[in-house]
Image (cartoon, rainbow, N blue to C red; front, side, top):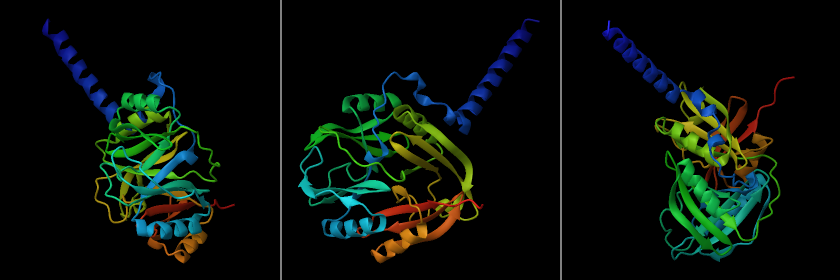
Length: 312
């Protein structure tokens, strides 16, 4: 008789352990707001200050600016030559402000110090010290500790899964016009790190998972007849789409940094071709959008899409 309770207890332990594994690996777990347990305030400003970092050779800067603005419209700030790293370097810099997203354009005249050039985007924050504290509390690594630049402070962080981002703060707050459409930050993460990435990013951004599709069409990442997992997140910083893959990707998938939403994809593609951009992936349709992949002078690759109109 004395062994039966022990057997039942062992059975209970095994059942509880199995339940824990199922919960830990369930996509639905990503829908739980991760920020609910933190007291650190949000530091996001607005999507127009989520800037894609584009690095091109100095000789390609003007050609890129001309092509990008001819494709999407908008304007450029005045080009300056400055130092944007904590160690000695020199680069031209300018911001391209378009109705569909903002670009920080760098044309380094010196070798690029590590790890600059590997960050995908820059997020404007309301307070750098609070942002670093929040990032660390959420599980991010600090690759480059905060340092002063000519107009504020910068840092480089890395999320679980190896996703690098810049955080920046300006002494004088910038004032950019709102966007017509919010671009998506496109990140590629392995299935082994996606849960940690989503949990950490939600905790930092105070965002929410708007969709978690375990069997999205493989055509979206260049693989016909297959499926993959796609997670979309919205926050005050903007949109983020995580592509969960095994890394067996055809070019150019994984090389793009941002997806730009435009009213009419065909019209935008025509403008891009006329502006010396190269169409790497012809337009295709999937899950309510029509998409293409484009490479601009200087090598920058972007996804461009438009929402498909519903039939009346």
